[in-house]
Length: 329
Ligand code: GA4
Image (cartoon, rainbow, N blue to C red; front, side):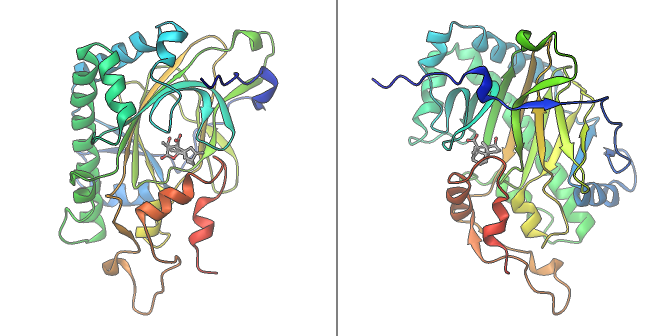
């Protein structure tokens, strides 16, 4: 039996935060009821991060999954450890990825298209109440539908035909998409130290096409602006936050930006977030869409498949600039 010791408090990065910086101007708000929604959504993707309101995902799906996840995180450590450590699927505690990254977090990472190889996904479902599996399934299918609607609107805005050219990658039964349920406990040890926060999830970009995040009403999520400033995203438990992933940046030859983000822990309140990572099938070639290329425009990136990118991502540290290896010099 291998027993992994937990990292000590000194192993976590401490972040000194001054006054929370204001919300950036570029921060985009989008509603499907706006007539020029397709233009706005393209602008939002160029920025790389936006919030979707009036999304149509039933509130009961959101609250059911939050309650089921909390039920799991409230189990004793030994019960949770039965479905860990994350490999990358399953229950993970403090360790993120296979290369030494740590954060003040515990989580469940699941494949959304279960197959026999994702044994950890199956074992989580076997170890938790039946309600957990149905809450995951209902939530994922509603959020995936929303992500596909957004991708179709983006396709309209960019003039990509057919309009399901992007969304079909997420709808494909072989789509390599994940659901991540994150629990950031409050860090009581740091309560007395005003202005010092623990890093819950270190800075990174998401490798996939698009990520859809919903959190409870606790702050912590920050995004990095082009000039390197970190800004806090005000929490909004009724909306979904979208971010462009590395693959989407490549598919638009750098026009859309995969924005760096991170999570700082709150001293007093626990933060819960659930993120759907929409990825293509493993064999999909990730390359700029021909219809988006101007005459004579060259791809900024070497050719690669999603499988190759993912393998390379799992050899990297969280904060690494993963696309660097695939850029044409
Ligand atoms: C970041 C986005 C998703 O959470 C994730 C993460 C994955 C993991 O936690 O297993 C990675 C990270 C993420 C990128 C680099 C590698 C892989 C941890 C890590 C150090 C599930 C994903 O797809 O990539």
